[in-house]
Length: 241
Ligand SMILES: [Zn+2]
Ligand SMILES: [Zn+2]
Image (cartoon, rainbow, N blue to C red):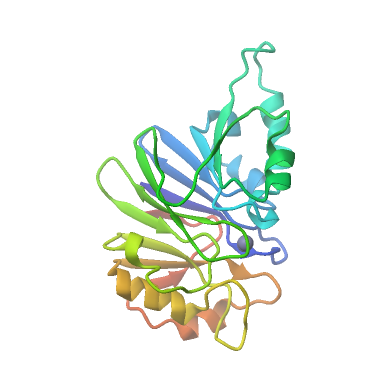
C-alpha cells in the first residue's frame, strides 16, 4: 500500500502546513484517514473526495475532522441527480456525540461508529481498531493490505501499558510524536515513547507524525530518535509500506 501524508501537525498547523490527514492507496482502493485543517486541498491533488472508498477518523478532535465540514460541500456538488449522489462511508468513534452530529447531519456520508476490537473491510484493506488513551475515544488502527503488509496508526494517544500489542510485527508504525521530551505534558507521546512502542512491537519502520504546531520541533524531534529505522514524515511525503 502507499501512504501519502496530507498533513502532519496538531492541534493546529505550522504556517503553510496542515493538520492530520493520510491517504492510503492499495490497488484500486483509496481511503482517507483523518481530515484536519488543510487536508481537503491536499487530498484534491490526488483524488476527488467522492471517489474515495471511505473516510476513517481516528477520533473527533477538530484537528482530525474539521475539513469534513468543507468536504461535505464537495460531495453535495457531485454531477449526479439528487437522490443518485454517492454517499461516502465514514467510520468514527461514537463520541463526542455533538461533534459527530455536527459533522454528519445532512451530509452525504454513510456514518458508521466503530470501537476497539471492531474490524472492517474496505476494498482490499482490512482495518482492526484498538482503543488508545486520549481525552476522547480514539481508534488506533491496524491496516492490512491485499499483500499482507501492515501499517499501524496510533491516532492521538499518550503512552499506556501494552499499547504495542496490536501493532506487533507491523511493517510500519505511524505514531503520534507531538512532544520532544517528557518536559512537555499532555495526552500525546513524546519521541522516545514512540520509539519505545516501535521497539516493543518489533516494527520495521517508525514514521513520526502529529508534530506540535506551536513551534518548529522537527530538528529537536530528530535528535531524540532512538530507533534504527525512524524518521519524521514529510508533508506530501508518499511512502510504500
Ligand atoms: Zn490531534
Ligand atoms: Zn486529539
